[in-house]
Amino acid sequence: MSISDTFKAFRGLKILIVGDVMIDRYLTGSADRISPEAPVPVVRLHQRDDRLGGAANVALNIAALGAKPYLCTVIGQDADAAKLEALMPEQQLSTRGLVRSAQRRTTVKTRILAGSQHLLRVDTEDTHPLSTTEAEQLLTAVRSILEAKAIDAILFQDYNKGVLSYEVINAITLEAVKRDLPTAVDPKFDNFWAYKHVTLFKPNLKEIRAQAPFPVDHSPASLDRAAAHIRSKLGNPFTIITLSEKGVYLNEQGQGQTLPTHPRSITDVCGAGDTVFAVAGLGLALKLPLQEIAQLANLAGGQVCEKVGVVPVDREQLEKEYRLLGEKGRL
Image (cartoon, rainbow, N blue to C red; front, side, top):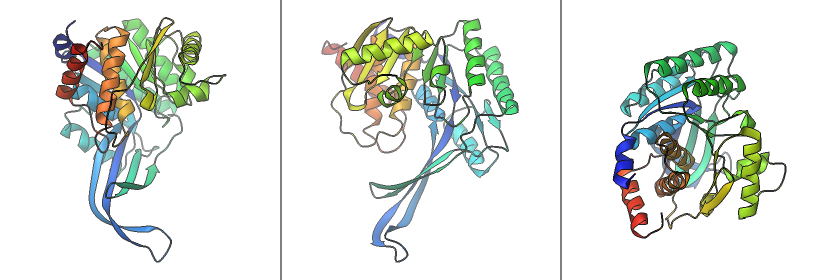
C-alpha cells in the first residue's frame, strides 16, 4: 500500500476505544512574588483551559487521522463530567458510549503553570475497580456499538483509574475473538497481565521493567527477552515497547528491532503515548506491516512532543514526514 493510500484508508476505519478518560486542565498565569503564608509562588491566574485526555485523547488522535472513534468509559455525575460531555461534541466525538456513575469522580489532572514553567499538578480521581453494576453498564454500551457499527479494531487504553477491571478486559477480549477483531493494549500496572491473546501489546520501558522478573535495559538482547516474556504470558503476536528518547522497539513473532527517534525540539511529552497508541491501533486495523506501524507511531509521538499540552497529531504533517522518510530510503 502506498503512503497516500495508507492515509486515505484511515478515513474508512471505525475504532472502538475502551478505557480511562480524563480532563487535562491547565491553569496558566504569572508568578512574580512569593506567598507570605508559605515559601511558594503566588500565581496570578490568566487562563483556564480544559482538554480531553487519557482514552479521550486516543479518540481525538484517531479522529485527527480521519477515522471514526467510538469511546466507551465510565465517568462521574459531577460538574467535571458535564464539562467532559460538553467537550466531546465540540471535538466531533460521540457521547454514546459514556456511562455515568454517582459512585465515581470524573478524573481531572490540573496543571498549574507560570509562563512556561510547570509548578504543580493536582489530581482528582477514583481508582478503585468498577462495581458489578458499572461494569455491566459499560459492557452493554460496548456490545451496543459492536452490534451497530462495523468496528475494525478495539483499543484498550489503561490509566489505572479502575475502568479496565479484569472482568471488563476479559469480556471485551472475548467479544473481539468472537468477531475476529484485532485488539491493541496500552497497559498500566494493575492488570498488566490480564490482556490474554491480544494482537498488539504496547507497554513503555518503565512499565515492562516493573513487571518483568529480570532487569530490562535498552539493549537488543534485553528487549528481545522482555518481548519473549510478554508473548509467553499473553500469547500476543506483536509487541511494541516505547523507549522515550531512544525510540521504539518492535517484535513480531520473536523477531525484534529498535527504531530510533527522529531529531525534534521537545517541548512537552504529555499525551505522546496516547498518540503513539492511536496511530499503532489504526495501523493494526489496516493490517499494515509491524515495522510500518512502528515507524508511523514513532513519528507521530515525536510530533506532538514539539507542542505544549495534550494535543492530537497533525495528519498533514505526519504524512509529509513519513513521505520524506521514504524518499530518504529510511522506511
